Image (cartoon, rainbow, N blue to C red; front, side, top):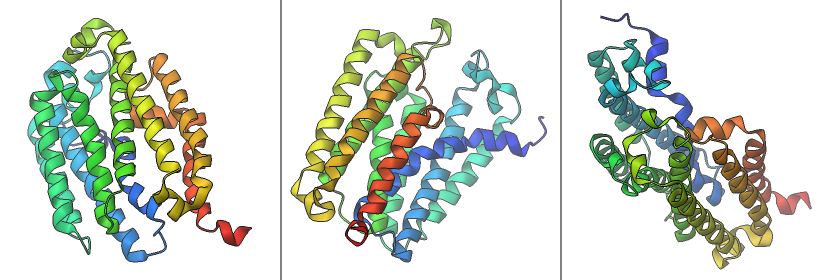
Length: 295
C-alpha cells in the first residue's frame, strides 16, 4: 500500500485547474457589486464550492483512467497511475471533497438551493462524461462547455441577479472555443497517446470548429458591448474592451497552433501577453465604476 503523501493528494485535486472556476466571478464583475461584503462572501463560497466539486470530479476521472494513464508518456506520473495514491484512498478523498463542496454551497445567504442544484447537474454531467460521453465527438466538448455555463449561472445566483442573455451567449461560445482548442492541442501528441475521441476529429474539422466558435464569441461580445443593457450599466466605454478580447482570442489561437492549450488553466498563465490582456480587461471593470470620479 503506498504511503499517504499530502503532495500526491494536492496533485490529484489539480488546484491549478481552479482558474476555470473564475467564471463564477463574472456576475460579480459585470454587476459591479464588489463593495457589498455579503455578496462578495456568497460569490467566494460559490467559487470554493466549485473548486471542491471540480476536484472531486478530477479524482474520479483519474481513478477511471488510471490503467490507461499508466501507459501514457506524461499522464503516467499522475498519482493513481504512478501508484502514489491507492484507489481506495483516492476515492475517499473524492468523497471528502464532494461533501466539502456541498457544505460550502449551503452556506450562501441566498439561492443556496439553486446553487446546490447547479452543482448536482455539474457533477452528474461530468460523471457521465468520465464514464462514456467523453468518447462521443462534439458531445464531449459541449459537456466541457456546460461546466463553464454552470459556473456562470452559479455566479449570478450568488450575486442574486438574473443572468444576462448576453453573458450566457458569450460564455457559451468562448467555452466551446476553449473546448475545441483543447482537442486541437491534443492532436499534437503521438497517435498512440491520444484520447480515443480524436479519431473522430480531423485537423480540418477542428480548425473549422475553432474558427466558428471564436467568430461567434467575438460577435456576441461586440453586440453586448454596444447593447442598451451595457450602455445603461457601463456607458459607452465597454466597446473599448473589444480589442482586448479580439487580441486575447487570436493570441490563444496562436498558442494552440504551436501545440499548447491542452491544459487551459496552465497554458493561459504561461503566456504573459494573455495574462496582461486578461488583467487589463478586469482592470477596466474595476476602474469603470470610478470613471466619473477620476475625470
